[in-house]
Length: 57
Image (cartoon, rainbow, N blue to C red; front, side):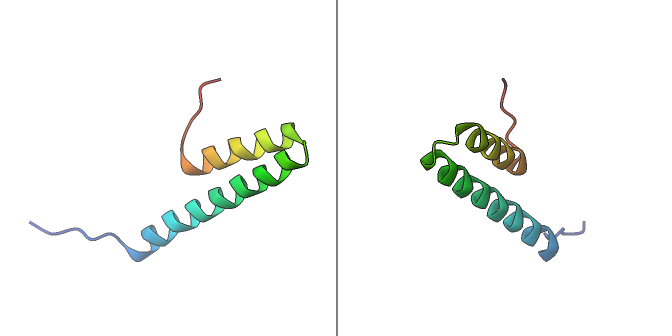
């Protein structure tokens, strides 16, 4: 049996996805404060999509 290892590139890609999702969430908060709710909702949806969370609308 051969042991499998997680490749560093896979780990880095996961961290990059999380970082991008966090940035989108922060931008959503910024637009909420400016009362630009449609933009904030869109950015939240983008963050969820990046994270792989699918909302049921």
